[in-house]
Length: 349
Image 1 (cartoon, rainbow, N blue to C red):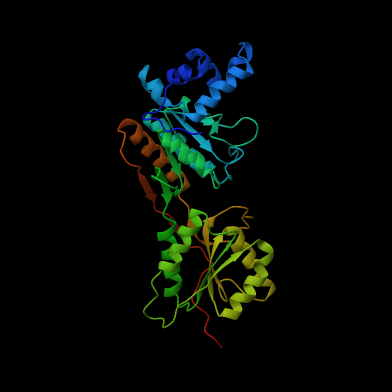
Image 2: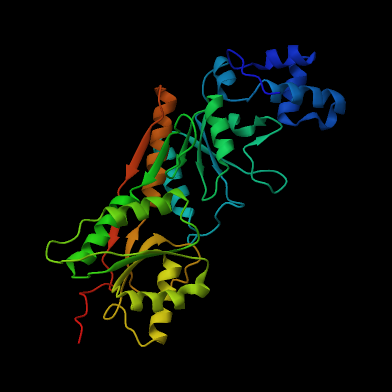
């Protein structure tokens, strides 16, 4: 049974409730008992009490003994940290590292033992080794984020992150504003039917933000009728059918959520004798997952990943140095690559 104490329990509370010494609780928390004889029953008793009372080790206890360590943790829900400059997450980490150095903080990268990505294990988290943490990843464990928030541990999520209950602090790209701007540019070029397409479900927050920008776009006064459907594809095998539907619906422009989708649209359009942008204008909306990077000069939304890393670091340090009573958020403007894949609507013969 989970309990909700009036105040967050301390290690001393856990020791008293489990009937052990505080040193034993510390050894269990830090998994350093390989050379110390702690019976499995004692270990399980300590962990059970921690789970029942919602105990989370964090930086608060350390601050009582001498203040912050000037260390910022970085944790990703992805299975591995990026190892090359072409990785999606590399620019985020570059911005974090540069800003940490400017602010006088060190970075500590966290991984998960055993292959499974988890912030919490047996009711505790190793993030307490850092003063606060930056979290990132496409598919986070939202329950763990909520648990971390409820523990009082300071963190900032990199990306627009909505959770149940009180909000969390985050830094996000302004996908909505940039997508709206690109859609309105297509309207200005005379396109009377503009479509939106993506691969995979649209439940992820970045996907919803992009679609919101598409739907908020204001039609040009010079064009009498502007509508456009939203297509969600299961995988790239369905792109050829999408091109057929675009032709059938009379759409002359499409915003592709993923660059991979834009690349496949170009291939499938060519097979049908269509030219980009003469017959079909295509915009890539910045998601580079799986992209082949075929050299096309795409008209595109550019995700400000390095600046997001910097902003997230600044926001977290602000939380550490002057704790806020409410969650904070920052929106970073996306830039637009003009590219060569959109043009005026082709007049009907």
